[in-house]
View 1 (cartoon, rainbow, N blue to C red):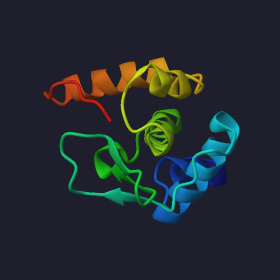
View 2: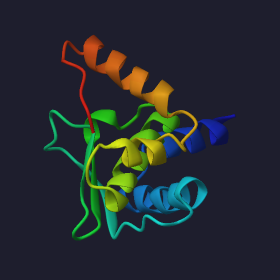
View 3: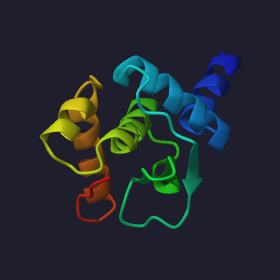
View 4: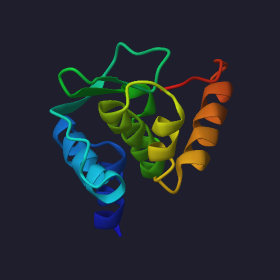
Length: 125
């Protein structure tokens, strides 16, 4: 039981290396491996975003504010940023790719509730 709890906690609080590994797995599973990040890391300086991406150099940053949230929510934020490597804007093509993640809508709702519960306005990635 303790081993299972430790494994679950490790998934919820991955290292930067774990984030990159997870991003590559998610890209393979939901984006046919088309999105290939150079780095994915936690950052402390994002107070109004869940994540950000710089398509020009393939870097993704995930806010430490979501560290510890359910794995499927973190996966959604990673997917969102991975899609930005392919489509920089939030147009229809972008959302069509994001929606390939089956829990996308649920995760967006979770993040809106999380944000409202923290007395903040709902946010975007």
